[in-house]
Length: 341
Image (tube, rainbow, N blue to C red; front, side, top):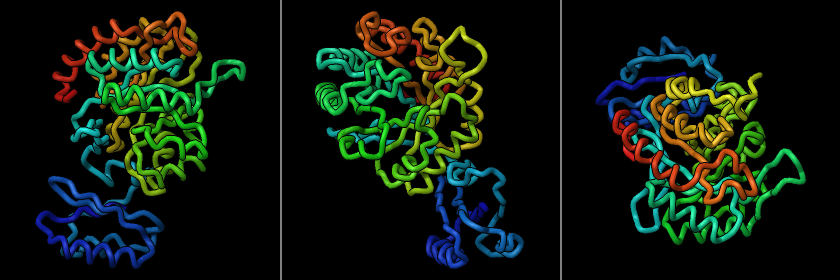
């Protein structure tokens, strides 16, 4: 249930009204926008009389939410959410609400020289965040599984060398203790419905980059975000990374129509992964531009200094020179969309 509060209502009155609502065994989610304050009621609201609430002097409008996702719903939070990542030197890098986040780096960390070289290259080209996998979920048990904690240490070195916040994938709850230096925790497609993990992440203060499962609907993606939010965290970035269809000319089918739908239904930032979405490096630049044109709040893509010798996903990784050229185009697209890089 959504309760829109009348403009000009006193803060103390709103608090007293919220406290009275919580006595009815519902949780009240408070969202204060620049134009209006909205109260979202989570729980069993069937016994709450909407007409009686509408008669309250503070209430402008009462609506019942039909969708199964509540906290992630734009009705609960009408304005776009922004995820801020503080920088050591002050200030922050942001994704959402007009800020375009560009996350770039190799699929996996392979050596100190590789990750630092790529980090410096993507920073110089204008990237705001560095990605790199230390723990890699692979289809084959014989494929490179990542460097583990050693890879995280190298990511931190690259972070210190460039100042770029780092994004890395977490695969299990017991890995949380070694992710202290990671700025944004990525949850991959295979773990999108690992509900025990999502619940634990709800108690985590770090931003969560949640990738859509390759056989999951957008509603299931939003419900996965709801699991995290029900645990207490609203610092979530949704990621469209392609889904499995009957076509085989690309690794996945990049569902760009999901971007405007998610932006309409939810207040959470939405980014796109054109690398996994296509699996072909030559397609990445055009799909990255298409993602921004579709309204995405950012992109995450794979950049490798020597894709032919990459230990993981070299065929979908672009080189630093290609990334630098792409960034020039993305700046123009950002201007057209009224977003800030």
